[in-house]
Length: 197
Image (cartoon, rainbow, N blue to C red; front, side, top):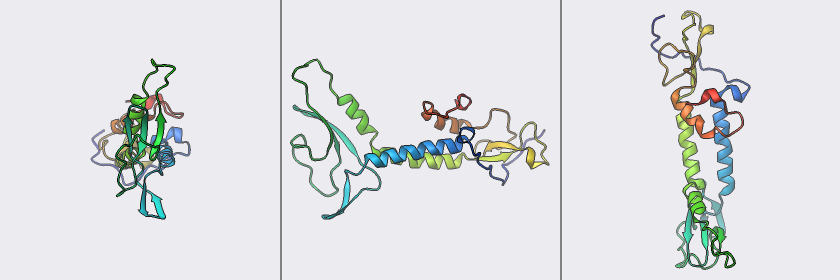
């Protein structure tokens, strides 16, 4: 069978079972992450005094360690000065942990707080938006498979509209790019071993 020069104009209809449809399943994981990021947000506000609203792009967090405590801080309201000593008082702190004088060998929470700050809601929401754009570029279309009849579109198989412009072989879908996106959620229910890169 000769090469097929392009994808067909017929978009693949999604399966009713998300476990059979990697695009739908991945979209559901992104939705779950977005809900969690938005639930974790709300400490950063914008607007006028008396009419503050949460910043729609999510909170930015910072991990700070002082003599008396390690804290995960939420960024302060835009255009308001930050206290000179962020360790005095709890304003803006999501998590604060003081050393345990009874257990001087207790580990510092800073590595966990730094990790949390590096994955704050603002960053997560930006990554979700970027991943949705990537997903849109790698959505399946119907294309000619190795066992398809080029003259019979009912025999076409799912293929990536960006990556798979020629005859589709078994195992070509999902494409490598989508497989790399899916692997981030390999620990979640519904992930299939045949989606691994």
